[in-house]
Image (tube, rainbow over all chains, first blue to last red; front, side, top):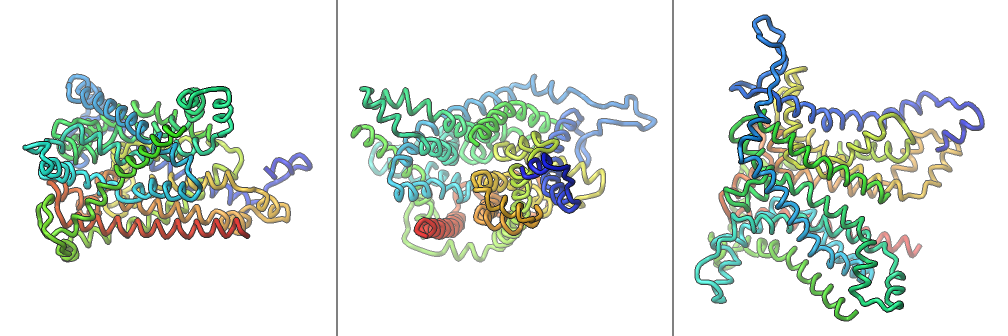
Length: 307
Length: 270
């Protein structure tokens, strides 16, 4: 800012030290992200066109200039063709999107009234409640998923409780089902929904509610016509923060879901670690990236609008 | 109005019960004498004793702490630089791409980040012979990459909401940008850098997927060991471990928020 001001008065030449400092501050994190975040995607894309072989690393090079090579370009669409032909992958993609979308909606249903309650509480209570929301977020994600294994298992707490009351005679199958996956996702991701919702609800001008009430609106009318539209940025940010990572979730379906709980993150992980088919895993990752890239861009836009 | 506030109150009660009951049950059963998860056999510390005799878990915990401390420190340095580059440096070429890729690791599915980093390491090894082997160092680089985004977002929001007049005054008095950054800006954003460090530390300590992809044969972090154990079902010594981790983190967070709360109060009073 001060640079532009000075340049109006007289031609300003930045001292060398200042220029170095500026290039250093911008360049180092920029280079790091280009090298370890952006460039790796290009490599994933490249390897998704390779052929798996039993070697280290287990895929063929794309370019072969050696004398005995029949073609110099060895790229193949086989991995993608295989993805479209095998039902497994379609089912995985579709199921991941479905589970992520429904979980996001449940998070919104539970999280909205909570965020509303926190935003309307007295300042001291508000701080305590906020800390209670953030606290689980800091404690181990893996262990919080694990906690549900003890609750939902065949000999778990919920089953023994229900049997002691006499509601059921034989234990219900709850662990290793899709229901357990929903519970796990909602449980671990709900702080991400509550916090952005709280941020928009807390900033909201309450005089609009008073005005609506004075003009004769019922509480639910005020909510639908005033509160809900005004809290839309929070709803969008929170939903994307839940939806995008949930699509690729691996840990929750692996621990709480059944063998048939095919979420794409788990399919990719197994393709890589169990089948050791790196090119196919890369093709799965590329398609997953295509699915999440639009929500990610929406998320970034919503972040920039908030600033 | 009365009816709606009753609804909000019950939603809050339900929500917090949902968030806390599983953790409390887990903690309670870590003191269970019985080895069967749902049968209470009396109070006992035997699973804690078993835990401290388990060398695999102790080694993995030490490795995880080392990786977490290193990666959090580098992530804080790089993330703070990124935050400065996004708020204090005006316009430059490629700024749009920079803003684009700085927030993306926050929401990127872990399997993609993990796979892409691993393939990057493998390609680098073929090209320039580095990294020689995968293990603690590659996990650390991976953790720096995704947690620097969290630090950058925290630092950036502090920088953009901050009063710029002190820095402008320092510049007007002839302070060079680097000098102003170290003498004025960094001390002002130190609390955000600290919370960024803590967040990066816990994220690293907790990560399973990215570490599994980027680790080699030798190195197993604590989440990797825990995961391989609990995949087969509930084990009481992991309950004990969970209680220790959750207890330590919770006490740390409560103390930190209490200190911040008191400082805010003092600032308001002064």
